[in-house]
Image (tube, rainbow over all chains, first blue to last red; front, side, top):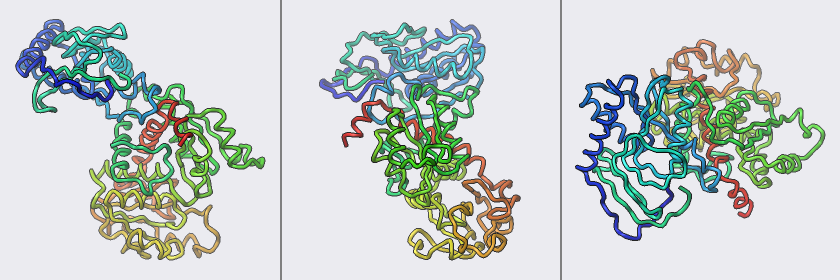
Length: 192
Length: 315
């Protein structure tokens, strides 16, 4: 949920392709360990890169456990808490796509970067409109701190201490052509 | 690409990118109506006022449902029950409604240009829900969304618009949008309802068979009897004999051709029951898509912060 950013120093690569791969494999193992047999576990990715990461987690879990987990897509735009704060044209809405009942399932919500927690709050509200899961667990590739809401992740690829003036960018193979996490020093512009 | 307008008054002059953006947005809203809980909190605390100075059930209901599924409050004022019938001018009505600080006005009016007038005098977004025989932009957008949903594209398709072209705001909005999106348009109807001056919009056919032959989409229009004087048609029977879309006529179109109608349909006048209820008929899809289109428009116009209202007034 960050606004447009202007880089003032070249981006710093903090995790390379191998590192991202290892993080995803470990997170998949943790999900399997915590949910024996992964029965009733479903993955829901938050658009856009949360979906890419959820897809990769699903592949890893299939390799470990031999189970294909249902994968849903959630767009949190309509649940944002900052729409009325900006006089700009509201952001583009993309479709939410959850084609399975989430009632009584264990939902693993997946995003790329956990920051203020506001995206997760919006995603939880959106999720509850689809049913009443038995539990919701949160998986993020990067936790960069600076929480503004009482939210924490259950599965974290990497804790990355950052300054609020920095921006964390996650690249995922299928969308961006490579796996990589970079820190960009930036002048924050607009609401996050 | 985004949609940059402060109002939605018409589709004339709108770019292909803008229309595409509106259709893509509307597509994303369709899913909400299929949920068990058909409501998102997006426009919580916003008020949408409908000003319906002309009878409308479908469009008003569609806007109302769209607003409510976005959690906005919807209040509707209709011409016959309002102060308009007590002699208030349109400007005074508009100013009074504006003083109640709505976040969006939706207006239908028998006079072309009335929503444009309103937009100049109120500090909030205005959506044209049909003005006289001028434009009906949300109807054309839902028509395009329906066509794109079934056929996967709009560019390159041949579309026949059949019936009371002269009085049809649905036609005007559709001609602009379809042509902008790369479709070819034919206009079909009796000479009295289809002036030859409209040839710049598309090929003119005064014969239904030649008009629908080989087309991908047949868009039927309702005979606007409330807008017609006595002299446009000899009798309804005669009109129906020449311009009613029957199964035989539809068979002249492409095998997978679809039929659209903005409703309400006059069964047996412009469309036979067999066609209206048949496989090719997309009439109910149109209605479902109408809610999604109106949700997208209300989101884009009323979904932003209040500051923009003052900015809009300053412009």
